[in-house]
Length: 180
Length: 118
Image 1 (cartoon, chains in turn green, purple):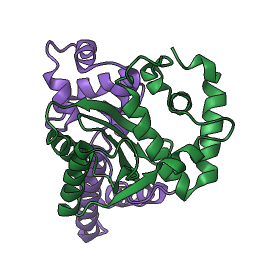
Image 2 (tube, rainbow over the protein chains, first blue to last red):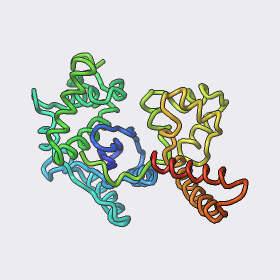
Image 3 (cartoon, chains in turn red, yellow):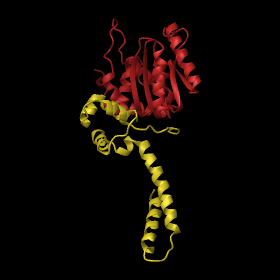
Image 4 (cartoon, chains in turn yellow, brown):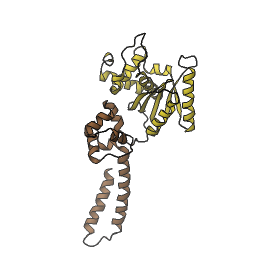
């Protein structure tokens, strides 16, 4: 099953393409000057990868992410997906944290390091620990999107995904060594 | 783990390039191209690489050509299967007598063996 997971921000789009939970096909972050560009980029990704489903984060209405700009972009994406009859699946924040919370509290940084442990090709994107006064790293949407995808697969087969995460991380390198 | 309904990508050059961390320009340089347009065209399946370039991709990524270009391989397989069936039909219509009978029998045997082994 090929899926595209999207981390949608008003001016950014993080995406990952997976073929099953263990095969990462493509990833990236795109920055836009105008909000309408999100759909253009997604159309190109879908044309190349023919996914079975698009994964989006289920953003709660009281979340700080649920801004008018986000709603506008989200609505455009959903309308487009409906027009081409491409199914959308929503992944909740709780499902993401549950997937990665085996041994410790699943913070964004920790999830990013775990994902980089599973997919060493992403390791160089892992941002250094963020200081309070710093903005979020540009590459973080990649890990947010990858976390959505793995949480989606974990919903279908939780044991297999958790085993994959644990085995990959212990095989490749200790957790602390992944971050720059 | 479910793996059904995956429509094969036409090629996996971009996948392996991104895994390696190379950009299109660097990959073009490794292939001996001057610009990076050819690699972009290969990745988007707008053109097929020459045999030399396809083998160069194999050498660079250490992945068999058939795995880098699964759709092309699948198409070749289908075409060959159809032509072999046509050839088999033609051979079977030949009479089993005469000086060419042994070689015709050998060809039919080879075709049968080919299908058994797959």
